[in-house]
Image (cartoon, rainbow over all chains, first blue to last red; front, side, top):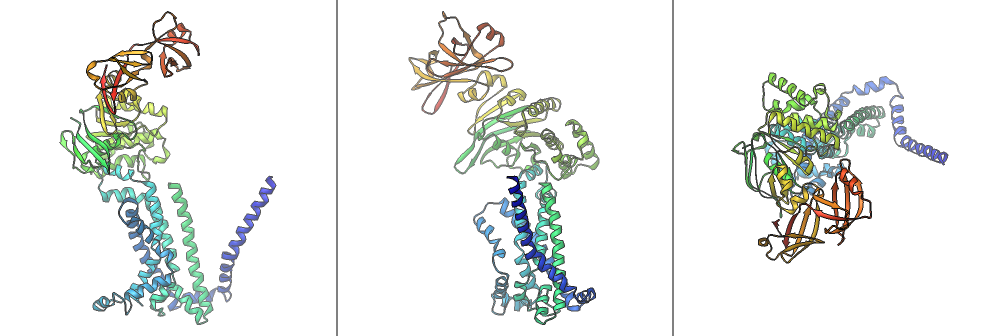
Length: 270
Length: 355
């Protein structure tokens, strides 16, 4: 009886490990092997290329913008969705997930429809001299759009869980809304928020589709790390493509490790 | 006057949760707001605190009209059933919170927090987080936190509700002693009649959003003004019967009625405390007969359940001595004489009181 159970457990473990190996470890292994096939120096040289450096700076800047905007608005939206009852609340709750459901390419295209040459806001942009599409503002909007749900979805359950009583206790002790938020509510949601921010950052780093449509991908100007990889493959600059891909993957991996640590922290607090 | 509510009313949609409630709590009094769950007692407390807005009526705190004051300005201390301690703050920080946001001087804060830690007997715990404390300790921290900024009145919402029986008993005795020492005007909500009877100076009994009766423990126990109050406070037998020829006939028992209350009343209810019944086994007795169904040991006495002739069950409490004398056994016949009974008669839904 227990012998059979034991063998089932081994099969299950083997199945899981096999699945992970084929889908995750093998591709990563191939990437690492190919990157260093021509030695570590090639790898470093690639990373020092002007256009590669620029691409990374751009990727991290866009991710930072997305993180800041989505952290602030994400907390506000989560707050409103949890604490307020209003007509259309369920609709808003569903809309928040739209960036998960819509393909990033479509998201990029929607921005073109708004800000492009035939877009609704084009006359306004012309008048003010601002450029959105094929420039940084459009790319920032696209990155923010695709990574919008994470903070909201992480903060909402935490807010729900803490409930209202701690806030009410703070009010009875004389604290105003602002003091209550910073001293009571915020410390309660900080780990959830940080987790959401990490997910947002990881998602923003890897964004490709929406940026591809909206950026114009001009090397050294509007080319992010993922767009660089795409161009490098196209131009058969394989070593360049491998090195940048591996660097992106490595950053994401460390972000994931940080996330695991955070998740533990959240569980400890709960 | 510590707290005064006048015609306080709260509606949630169609449902009237609190219906024209009036009562006073004198300066320095400890008053219980007692009622079953859903009676509106917590809503009353939350309106006094400012956590709910009344639809009608007024609230006075130490003589001042506080009805439209913000929560922050009311100067009330509030203790929640589930403590509502700030989870990420230490005991010390929790107690200091109110003093800090109310801008007490640093030096004073330190002294005050230490004083309160001493008061709630948690001196060694100032650096603990709430999650490291027991339920009783957490509630003491919550109490210290509420008292720290010297509130005008202290409101407690089922303060012992989440604790187990032994801790609850200790904590309520301790709160009574604390109150006797400091005399903070206090109002606490409870559904536990023993709690209310034991520690309060005065009880406000609430049912279905209305005040049923206000009085001291003794007044309410001995002289309930409605069958609800009689049934809710202390153990009681409720025996049902009819009004016949100016008397209440309840099984084999007959109770005289005041004729002025009888207009159209057909149903009668006799409320008899288990301790207000005399039993006899002598066959010569002229009192109504019943049969012992069950005998249980209560510690301080004996509980005897008796089946009456018409099938209703009556519970009687006997002292151990009396039980020894009677030598009661299950299945035995006994003769029953109520020493005291409250009889209520009614027509349709209305209830009236008579002797």
